[in-house]
Length: 271
Image 1 (cartoon, rainbow, N blue to C red):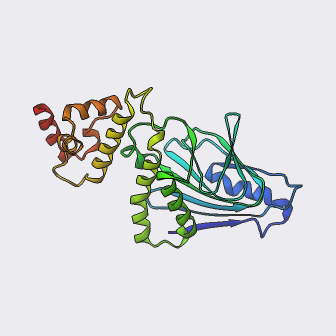
Image 2 (image 1 turned 120 degrees about the horizontal axis):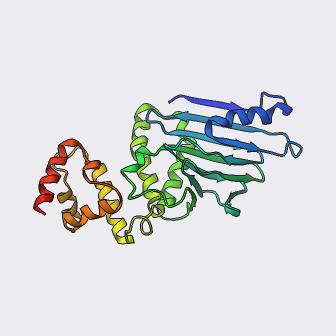
Image 3 (image 1 turned 135 degrees about the vertical axis):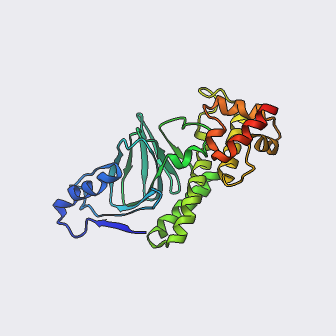
Protein backbone atom coordinates (compact mmCIF):
# COMPACT_ATOMS: atom_id res chain seq x y z
CA UNK A 1 0.00 0.00 0.00
CA UNK A 2 1.40 3.38 -0.99
CA UNK A 3 1.62 6.07 1.65
CA UNK A 4 2.02 9.83 1.49
CA UNK A 5 4.14 11.66 4.05
CA UNK A 6 4.04 15.38 4.79
CA UNK A 7 6.04 17.21 7.44
CA UNK A 8 6.41 20.89 8.23
CA UNK A 9 10.09 20.50 9.20
CA UNK A 10 11.67 21.54 5.86
CA UNK A 11 9.72 24.83 5.69
CA UNK A 12 10.58 28.15 7.32
CA UNK A 13 8.66 28.70 10.54
CA UNK A 14 6.49 31.45 9.05
CA UNK A 15 5.38 29.21 6.15
CA UNK A 16 4.50 26.13 8.18
CA UNK A 17 0.89 27.02 9.17
CA UNK A 18 -0.18 27.59 5.56
CA UNK A 19 1.59 24.48 4.29
CA UNK A 20 -0.04 22.44 7.06
CA UNK A 21 -3.50 23.74 6.16
CA UNK A 22 -2.92 22.72 2.55
CA UNK A 23 -1.89 19.20 3.61
CA UNK A 24 -5.07 18.80 5.69
CA UNK A 25 -7.55 19.98 3.04
CA UNK A 26 -7.88 16.60 1.25
CA UNK A 27 -8.82 15.07 4.62
CA UNK A 28 -11.63 17.59 5.25
CA UNK A 29 -9.79 19.20 8.14
CA UNK A 30 -9.04 22.85 8.84
CA UNK A 31 -6.32 23.85 11.32
CA UNK A 32 -6.33 26.80 13.70
CA UNK A 33 -3.23 27.60 15.71
CA UNK A 34 -1.57 30.32 17.75
CA UNK A 35 1.57 31.00 15.73
CA UNK A 36 2.89 33.31 18.47
CA UNK A 37 2.80 30.49 21.02
CA UNK A 38 5.47 28.23 19.52
CA UNK A 39 6.74 27.15 16.09
CA UNK A 40 4.45 24.59 14.49
CA UNK A 41 5.81 21.09 13.98
CA UNK A 42 3.45 18.59 12.38
CA UNK A 43 3.53 15.34 10.43
CA UNK A 44 0.81 13.62 8.37
CA UNK A 45 1.16 10.06 7.10
CA UNK A 46 -1.77 9.02 4.89
CA UNK A 47 -2.79 6.08 2.71
CA UNK A 48 -5.83 4.77 0.83
CA UNK A 49 -6.71 1.09 0.51
CA UNK A 50 -8.02 -0.53 -2.70
CA UNK A 51 -11.57 -0.61 -1.28
CA UNK A 52 -11.49 3.08 -0.46
CA UNK A 53 -10.66 3.12 3.27
CA UNK A 54 -8.54 6.23 3.93
CA UNK A 55 -6.12 6.30 6.86
CA UNK A 56 -4.19 9.26 8.27
CA UNK A 57 -1.82 9.43 11.24
CA UNK A 58 -1.14 12.89 12.69
CA UNK A 59 1.58 14.02 15.09
CA UNK A 60 1.62 17.71 15.88
CA UNK A 61 2.11 20.51 18.35
CA UNK A 62 -0.84 22.40 19.88
CA UNK A 63 -3.70 23.50 17.61
CA UNK A 64 -7.42 23.16 16.91
CA UNK A 65 -8.70 20.90 14.16
CA UNK A 66 -12.10 21.59 12.63
CA UNK A 67 -13.74 18.67 10.90
CA UNK A 68 -15.51 19.98 7.80
CA UNK A 69 -18.47 18.39 6.02
CA UNK A 70 -17.30 15.54 3.79
CA UNK A 71 -18.70 13.58 0.83
CA UNK A 72 -21.98 11.84 1.80
CA UNK A 73 -20.61 8.36 1.20
CA UNK A 74 -18.12 8.38 4.06
CA UNK A 75 -18.05 7.75 7.81
CA UNK A 76 -15.23 9.50 9.68
CA UNK A 77 -13.64 7.95 12.76
CA UNK A 78 -10.84 9.49 14.82
CA UNK A 79 -8.83 7.71 17.53
CA UNK A 80 -7.20 9.94 20.15
CA UNK A 81 -3.81 8.41 20.96
CA UNK A 82 -1.96 10.88 23.18
CA UNK A 83 -1.91 14.44 24.47
CA UNK A 84 -4.48 16.72 26.16
CA UNK A 85 -7.59 16.86 23.94
CA UNK A 86 -11.17 18.12 23.95
CA UNK A 87 -14.14 17.61 21.66
CA UNK A 88 -16.27 20.71 21.01
CA UNK A 89 -19.75 20.15 19.59
CA UNK A 90 -23.05 22.03 19.78
CA UNK A 91 -21.77 24.35 22.48
CA UNK A 92 -20.55 21.48 24.68
CA UNK A 93 -17.00 20.46 25.58
CA UNK A 94 -15.83 16.96 26.43
CA UNK A 95 -12.35 15.83 27.49
CA UNK A 96 -10.93 12.92 25.49
CA UNK A 97 -8.79 10.20 27.03
CA UNK A 98 -6.28 8.20 25.00
CA UNK A 99 -8.25 5.41 23.37
CA UNK A 100 -11.46 7.43 22.98
CA UNK A 101 -12.87 7.80 19.47
CA UNK A 102 -14.88 10.52 17.76
CA UNK A 103 -17.03 9.65 14.77
CA UNK A 104 -19.00 11.71 12.30
CA UNK A 105 -21.16 11.22 9.24
CA UNK A 106 -20.73 13.21 6.07
CA UNK A 107 -22.49 16.42 7.06
CA UNK A 108 -21.18 16.67 10.61
CA UNK A 109 -18.87 19.51 11.61
CA UNK A 110 -17.09 19.41 14.94
CA UNK A 111 -13.88 20.67 16.50
CA UNK A 112 -11.01 19.06 18.38
CA UNK A 113 -8.61 21.14 20.44
CA UNK A 114 -5.14 20.14 21.65
CA UNK A 115 -3.21 22.12 24.26
CA UNK A 116 0.09 20.36 23.66
CA UNK A 117 1.79 17.76 21.49
CA UNK A 118 -0.67 15.08 20.40
CA UNK A 119 -1.24 12.02 18.20
CA UNK A 120 -4.41 11.19 16.27
CA UNK A 121 -5.34 8.39 13.87
CA UNK A 122 -8.16 9.11 11.46
CA UNK A 123 -10.15 6.69 9.37
CA UNK A 124 -12.64 7.39 6.56
CA UNK A 125 -14.77 4.35 5.73
CA UNK A 126 -17.14 4.13 2.73
CA UNK A 127 -20.69 3.97 4.10
CA UNK A 128 -21.51 1.29 1.53
CA UNK A 129 -19.28 -1.18 3.42
CA UNK A 130 -21.33 -0.61 6.61
CA UNK A 131 -24.91 -0.58 5.31
CA UNK A 132 -25.47 -4.32 5.47
CA UNK A 133 -23.94 -4.48 8.94
CA UNK A 134 -26.07 -1.82 10.67
CA UNK A 135 -29.73 -2.24 11.60
CA UNK A 136 -30.47 1.39 10.73
CA UNK A 137 -28.93 4.80 10.11
CA UNK A 138 -26.80 6.48 12.74
CA UNK A 139 -28.82 8.16 15.48
CA UNK A 140 -26.79 11.38 15.25
CA UNK A 141 -24.43 12.94 12.77
CA UNK A 142 -21.54 12.65 15.22
CA UNK A 143 -20.63 11.28 18.61
CA UNK A 144 -17.94 9.91 20.90
CA UNK A 145 -17.12 6.29 21.73
CA UNK A 146 -15.25 5.24 24.83
CA UNK A 147 -12.30 2.96 24.24
CA UNK A 148 -12.31 1.57 27.76
CA UNK A 149 -14.83 -1.28 27.53
CA UNK A 150 -16.84 -3.55 25.23
CA UNK A 151 -16.59 -3.29 21.46
CA UNK A 152 -15.23 0.24 21.85
CA UNK A 153 -12.19 -1.25 23.56
CA UNK A 154 -11.78 -3.78 20.73
CA UNK A 155 -12.05 -1.09 18.05
CA UNK A 156 -9.71 1.27 19.90
CA UNK A 157 -7.05 -1.43 20.20
CA UNK A 158 -7.45 -2.39 16.55
CA UNK A 159 -7.05 1.21 15.37
CA UNK A 160 -4.05 1.79 17.63
CA UNK A 161 -2.31 -1.27 16.19
CA UNK A 162 -3.22 -0.15 12.68
CA UNK A 163 -1.87 3.35 13.33
CA UNK A 164 1.50 1.90 14.24
CA UNK A 165 1.72 -0.49 11.28
CA UNK A 166 -0.42 0.61 8.34
CA UNK A 167 2.53 1.96 6.36
CA UNK A 168 4.17 -1.49 6.38
CA UNK A 169 1.19 -3.75 5.54
CA UNK A 170 1.51 -6.03 2.52
CA UNK A 171 -1.31 -6.82 0.09
CA UNK A 172 -2.47 -9.94 1.92
CA UNK A 173 -2.56 -8.26 5.30
CA UNK A 174 -4.41 -5.29 3.84
CA UNK A 175 -7.06 -7.54 2.28
CA UNK A 176 -7.67 -9.26 5.62
CA UNK A 177 -7.94 -5.87 7.31
CA UNK A 178 -10.46 -4.56 4.79
CA UNK A 179 -12.70 -7.55 5.40
CA UNK A 180 -12.65 -7.33 9.19
CA UNK A 181 -12.42 -3.60 9.93
CA UNK A 182 -15.93 -2.61 8.67
CA UNK A 183 -17.40 -5.40 10.81
CA UNK A 184 -15.63 -4.14 13.95
CA UNK A 185 -16.65 -0.54 13.21
CA UNK A 186 -20.28 -1.54 12.67
CA UNK A 187 -20.37 -3.64 15.85
CA UNK A 188 -18.94 -0.73 17.84
CA UNK A 189 -21.58 1.65 16.45
CA UNK A 190 -24.46 -0.78 16.95
CA UNK A 191 -25.72 1.09 20.01
CA UNK A 192 -25.69 4.35 18.04
CA UNK A 193 -28.17 3.27 15.37
CA UNK A 194 -31.81 4.31 15.41
CA UNK A 195 -33.77 1.60 17.23
CA UNK A 196 -36.88 3.23 18.67
CA UNK A 197 -38.14 6.64 17.62
CA UNK A 198 -37.81 6.44 13.85
CA UNK A 199 -37.75 2.72 13.23
CA UNK A 200 -40.40 1.61 15.74
CA UNK A 201 -38.20 -1.18 17.08
CA UNK A 202 -37.63 -2.06 20.72
CA UNK A 203 -34.05 -2.76 21.74
CA UNK A 204 -34.39 -6.61 21.59
CA UNK A 205 -35.92 -6.32 18.12
CA UNK A 206 -33.11 -4.09 16.91
CA UNK A 207 -30.56 -6.55 18.31
CA UNK A 208 -32.30 -9.40 16.46
CA UNK A 209 -32.26 -7.46 13.21
CA UNK A 210 -28.59 -6.60 13.66
CA UNK A 211 -27.70 -10.28 14.17
CA UNK A 212 -29.72 -11.23 11.09
CA UNK A 213 -27.91 -8.64 8.97
CA UNK A 214 -24.55 -9.88 10.17
CA UNK A 215 -25.51 -13.48 9.38
CA UNK A 216 -26.59 -12.51 5.86
CA UNK A 217 -23.42 -10.52 5.26
CA UNK A 218 -21.15 -13.38 6.32
CA UNK A 219 -23.04 -16.08 4.35
CA UNK A 220 -23.60 -14.40 0.97
CA UNK A 221 -21.86 -17.27 -0.82
CA UNK A 222 -24.17 -19.87 0.78
CA UNK A 223 -26.66 -21.13 -1.83
CA UNK A 224 -29.04 -22.11 0.94
CA UNK A 225 -29.23 -18.64 2.43
CA UNK A 226 -32.85 -17.70 3.10
CA UNK A 227 -34.99 -15.65 5.43
CA UNK A 228 -36.55 -18.83 6.81
CA UNK A 229 -33.15 -20.31 7.64
CA UNK A 230 -31.97 -17.12 9.40
CA UNK A 231 -35.27 -16.98 11.31
CA UNK A 232 -34.85 -20.62 12.37
CA UNK A 233 -31.35 -19.94 13.70
CA UNK A 234 -32.70 -17.00 15.71
CA UNK A 235 -35.70 -18.94 17.02
CA UNK A 236 -38.38 -16.73 15.42
CA UNK A 237 -40.83 -17.10 12.54
CA UNK A 238 -39.99 -15.96 9.01
CA UNK A 239 -42.97 -13.59 9.17
CA UNK A 240 -41.61 -11.95 12.34
CA UNK A 241 -38.20 -11.42 10.78
CA UNK A 242 -39.78 -10.06 7.60
CA UNK A 243 -41.68 -7.46 9.63
CA UNK A 244 -38.46 -6.36 11.33
CA UNK A 245 -36.85 -5.79 7.95
CA UNK A 246 -39.89 -3.79 6.83
CA UNK A 247 -39.85 -1.68 10.03
CA UNK A 248 -36.22 -0.75 9.36
CA UNK A 249 -36.95 0.24 5.77
CA UNK A 250 -35.18 -2.82 4.36
CA UNK A 251 -36.02 -6.04 2.56
CA UNK A 252 -34.30 -9.36 3.07
CA UNK A 253 -34.00 -9.86 -0.68
CA UNK A 254 -32.13 -6.58 -0.95
CA UNK A 255 -29.35 -8.05 1.20
CA UNK A 256 -28.91 -11.43 -0.49
CA UNK A 257 -27.48 -12.41 -3.90
CA UNK A 258 -29.98 -13.12 -6.73
CA UNK A 259 -29.60 -16.88 -6.30
CA UNK A 260 -31.06 -16.62 -2.81
CA UNK A 261 -34.09 -14.47 -3.63
CA UNK A 262 -36.24 -17.24 -5.12
CA UNK A 263 -35.55 -19.46 -2.10
CA UNK A 264 -36.64 -16.69 0.25
CA UNK A 265 -39.84 -15.89 -1.68
CA UNK A 266 -40.93 -19.52 -1.81
CA UNK A 267 -40.33 -20.11 1.87
CA UNK A 268 -42.02 -16.88 2.88
CA UNK A 269 -45.19 -17.87 1.00
CA UNK A 270 -45.24 -21.08 3.05
CA UNK A 271 -44.56 -19.29 6.35
